[in-house]
Amino acid sequence: MPFGVDEAGKGPALGSMFAAAVFLEDRTALPDGIADSKRLTPARREELATRIREDDEIAVGVAEITTTRIDDPETDMNALAVTAHAEAIDEALSGLCDDPVSGLCDACDTDADRFARRVADACSISRSLEIDARHGADDDSKLVGAASIIAKVERDTHVAALADEYGPVGSGYPSDPTTQTFLESYVDEHGDLPSCARASWSTCERVLAEAQQTGLEQF
Image (cartoon, rainbow, N blue to C red; front, top):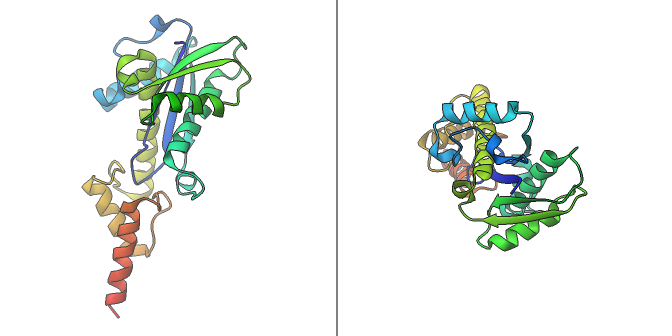
């Protein structure tokens, strides 16, 4: 499989989701230590991501799905995951020769074959693509593992930028107490959710509704 694709940030209540595609002709060019990004420390992920990006034999594509796109009522996260994978593939393969190429995605759908078909259909690049998708591909494939590292570092950088802007925001996941505290404090102070929040997420809807109810009870 000359390219692998994975995403990071599908589940958080804050910030963008990212997908990355990593393409190379010879998989031995990948740095040692590639693994599913969740199994690596942040420092190790950043080191490997830098080495991947600096290698001229490796092409990398990244797609960002913003909170505005996520909150669009005309779409859903399954469709957006498909879009993100396709956009990352298009970027990674742009400018390369038009030979047929195949790749592997970490499936973001309960039906892996359906996900692969949808990603292939969503790609706009004018070349013959053969796309497979498997659950747990970030563990089984070094290329998908490399893509997971790139996507996770992009997501971590994005969250760090949010923290620079807003103060401590945590990981962005609904279960993170720091994220919950940030949302509650921001809404208490401003009367609305921050622009980085996924307003359509139940966590964000609950925080906003509770703050509005508290405000009503004060009158």
